[in-house]
Image (cartoon, rainbow, N blue to C red; front, side, top):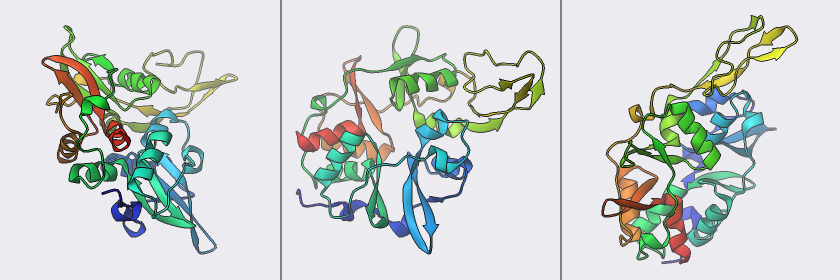
Amino acid sequence: MTGMHVADVMTPREDVVTVELPGTRDDALEYLQERRFSSVPVIKHVDGTEEFRGLVSRERLIEQPEEDQLALILEEVPSVTADASIVELSQHMLESGHRRIPVVDGELEGIVTVTDVIRTLAEGTVPGGEVHVGEVATREVMTTYEGTPLPAVQRQMYLADIPYLVVIEGAGEMVGIVTEVDILEEARVVVGEEATGDSIAAQDSEWMWEGIKAVGNRYLPTRYVEIPEDPVRNYMTADVETTTKRTKVESVAQTMLQADIEQLPMLSGDDMTGIVRDMDLLRAIHA
């Protein structure tokens, strides 16, 4: 059961979607929005050879809205080789925090994701499926009020360094969940108009990420990410899959794959006692 390797589950190079240097953020944004990837590999052709340069993640696109060139927003990330075991890979993901790991041996051979590892747990081909999720769940649950504007929700996620928020109503009851993917689907990069004068419209708005910067007596336009200011209730998922602490990891992994979700709130009766993220399930492999 422990003999599976990265080569057994990875997406091979011929099926990997990549963006190429030189390129712009819009090249990556298209794939991240349409295909709901967490990141996309960046390559560059040099003297007829394809070189892997890093990943552009959905977090970086939103957090660095002023940068347009891929070379300035890509991340150099650790890689694995195709002969690494799934157990080694899961530990690598837990330590690095990366959801998508490039498979590199001289050049890009493929990509392996946390979903690939979750699938092995769902199929029972790696250890850990019999562990109860209560043993690996995250106990601290981050929430936001259902009337919070979507840009403020994104800011909450950024400051907390998490890809989700549980949405609650006035009495504190859960009414939905919103994820980083939900926000990215609504994000649009825009450029402010050049202006002169002593004031800048919306510059002091608490929801504005990047305004028009003053230079001398002129204002130069800068790029920023525009997100609808409607309340998060309009974008959250209201029909939320949940679990309990006694549910086995294998079952939760199956639910995540079937529902195409990355986390499930953990309930005890009507009380929320934690949240189970797909990355949490990886800890069961090492329990």
